[in-house]
Length: 81
Image 1 (cartoon, helix red, strand yellow):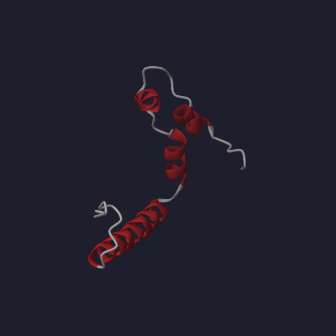
Image 2: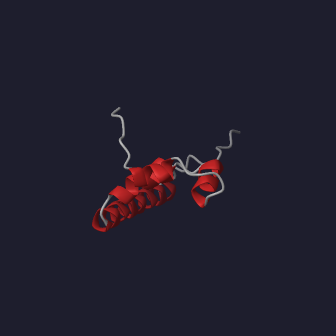
Image 3: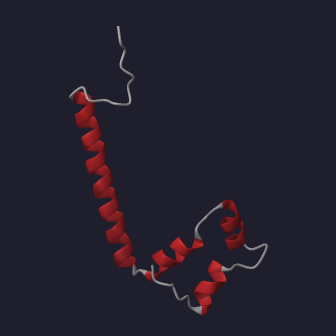
Protein backbone atom coordinates (compact mmCIF):
# COMPACT_ATOMS: atom_id res chain seq x y z
CA UNK A 1 0.00 0.00 0.00
CA UNK A 2 1.33 3.42 -0.93
CA UNK A 3 2.15 5.98 1.72
CA UNK A 4 -0.31 8.87 1.62
CA UNK A 5 1.10 12.38 1.57
CA UNK A 6 -1.13 15.00 3.18
CA UNK A 7 -1.11 18.72 2.52
CA UNK A 8 -0.80 21.07 5.47
CA UNK A 9 -4.55 21.76 5.35
CA UNK A 10 -5.33 18.02 5.27
CA UNK A 11 -3.02 17.42 8.21
CA UNK A 12 -5.16 19.83 10.28
CA UNK A 13 -8.02 17.39 9.78
CA UNK A 14 -6.01 14.16 10.12
CA UNK A 15 -4.28 15.35 13.31
CA UNK A 16 -6.85 17.70 14.89
CA UNK A 17 -6.19 19.86 17.91
CA UNK A 18 -7.81 18.65 21.15
CA UNK A 19 -11.29 20.01 21.75
CA UNK A 20 -12.12 20.58 18.08
CA UNK A 21 -15.06 18.98 16.30
CA UNK A 22 -12.61 16.94 14.22
CA UNK A 23 -10.95 15.62 17.40
CA UNK A 24 -14.34 14.64 18.82
CA UNK A 25 -15.23 12.89 15.56
CA UNK A 26 -11.91 11.02 15.55
CA UNK A 27 -12.37 10.02 19.21
CA UNK A 28 -15.87 8.78 18.37
CA UNK A 29 -14.36 6.51 15.72
CA UNK A 30 -14.71 8.49 12.49
CA UNK A 31 -11.90 7.69 10.04
CA UNK A 32 -10.83 11.20 9.09
CA UNK A 33 -8.56 9.91 6.33
CA UNK A 34 -11.72 8.82 4.46
CA UNK A 35 -13.07 12.35 4.80
CA UNK A 36 -9.86 13.71 3.32
CA UNK A 37 -10.01 11.16 0.50
CA UNK A 38 -13.55 12.25 -0.37
CA UNK A 39 -12.64 15.92 -0.21
CA UNK A 40 -9.86 15.28 -2.73
CA UNK A 41 -12.51 14.29 -5.28
CA UNK A 42 -14.27 16.87 -7.39
CA UNK A 43 -17.99 17.40 -6.71
CA UNK A 44 -18.70 15.61 -9.99
CA UNK A 45 -16.62 12.59 -8.89
CA UNK A 46 -18.39 12.46 -5.51
CA UNK A 47 -21.82 12.52 -7.17
CA UNK A 48 -20.71 9.83 -9.62
CA UNK A 49 -19.58 7.60 -6.73
CA UNK A 50 -22.87 8.19 -4.95
CA UNK A 51 -24.82 7.28 -8.09
CA UNK A 52 -22.77 4.09 -8.49
CA UNK A 53 -23.32 3.16 -4.84
CA UNK A 54 -27.07 3.75 -5.10
CA UNK A 55 -27.22 1.61 -8.26
CA UNK A 56 -25.35 -1.24 -6.51
CA UNK A 57 -27.71 -1.02 -3.52
CA UNK A 58 -30.72 -1.20 -5.85
CA UNK A 59 -29.29 -4.35 -7.45
CA UNK A 60 -28.67 -5.88 -4.02
CA UNK A 61 -32.22 -5.12 -2.84
CA UNK A 62 -33.63 -6.67 -6.04
CA UNK A 63 -31.50 -9.80 -5.56
CA UNK A 64 -32.66 -10.18 -1.95
CA UNK A 65 -36.29 -9.65 -2.95
CA UNK A 66 -35.95 -12.23 -5.75
CA UNK A 67 -34.33 -14.77 -3.43
CA UNK A 68 -37.13 -14.36 -0.89
CA UNK A 69 -39.80 -14.81 -3.57
CA UNK A 70 -38.09 -17.96 -4.82
CA UNK A 71 -37.94 -19.51 -1.36
CA UNK A 72 -34.23 -18.98 -0.83
CA UNK A 73 -34.49 -16.79 2.26
CA UNK A 74 -31.51 -17.97 4.29
CA UNK A 75 -32.31 -15.44 7.04
CA UNK A 76 -35.36 -17.52 8.03
CA UNK A 77 -34.49 -20.56 10.18
CA UNK A 78 -35.54 -23.89 8.69
CA UNK A 79 -37.75 -26.11 10.84
CA UNK A 80 -36.70 -29.75 10.97
CA UNK A 81 -39.42 -32.28 11.87
